[in-house]
Image (cartoon, rainbow, N blue to C red; front, side, top):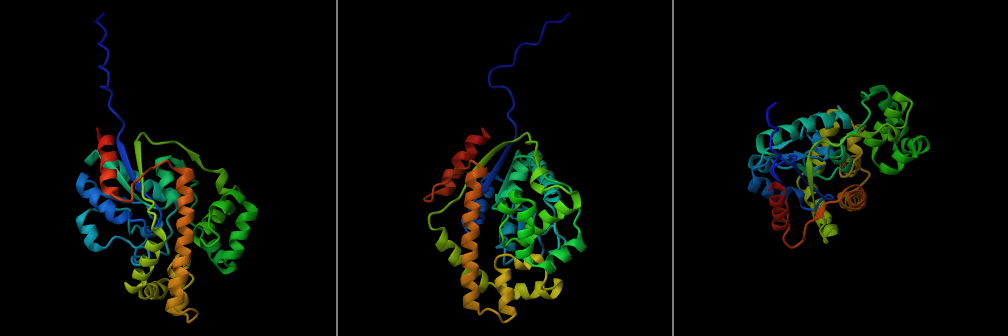
Length: 310
C-alpha cells in the first residue's frame, strides 16, 4: 500500500468564489459608485433592479445611460418587453448564468441594485414557484383594479400581502397568479438552497436620501419621463401594469389631464420616499451589509472588497 498523502497545509484550502453586492434604497448613489468599483476591479455590473429588466423603461427607472454602459459592461438589463413580464424564477435562472460566467471569467461577480426580493433569490438561493404567466387572468385582475386585487391577496395570503406594497400591481398580480394556478399561497412555496459563494454585501444609506430623491425626481421629469410614458402607452396601452409603478403612474395621469406637472413631481417624490423606506426596512431585516460611510464610500468599499479577494 502506498503511503497516505500528506495533510494539506494550513490555509491551503481554496475559498469559495466571491460575489460582491452593492445594495441600497433608490437614489442612494449605487450607479455612480458601482461604475467606479467596477472599473477599479475590472468587474462587470449585473443589474438587480426589477424594472430595469424591461426595454424602453429607461428614464423612469434611472437605467444606466449608454455612456455609462460603454464605460462598464452591464448585464440583466433590457431582458424583456414591458408586456412580457419576467417571473422571479426566470430572472433567477438568467442571473445565475451571468454570475457563474463572471466568476469563471473574472474571479468575482458584482451585483448592483435595490430590488430586495430579486437579490435575496440569488444570494440565499430561494426556489420560487415556477408558474407560467396567465394572460387571461392578468387581464381580469387588471379590470378589477389594484385596490381590489391587493385586498384579495391580503385575504388569501396575508404574508405575501403584507410584504407586497398596496400600490405594486405587478407583484400583486403575480402572487394571485401563483395562488390561482397552484391552489397554494406563494409564501408557502418558497424554499432555499444557498449557492456555494461567499457574499460580500455593501450597503449605501446616505443621510440626505430625502433630498437625493427630490432632486432625482426633478431630473427624471426634465429628462423626458412624460414623453417616455407616452411612448410606452402608445406601444402597449395604458393598462400595462408597469405603467402604474412609481413615476410612470403619475406621468400617465399628466397625459390624461388628471395631474399637472408640478403635482406629478410632488406625488412621484412622495411615492419614491415611501418606497425607499420599505427598501430600508427590507435590507435591515433580510440582509447584513457593511454599511458604507457617507464621507468616502468608494474607499470604504475598496477596503472591504480587497479583504474579500485575498
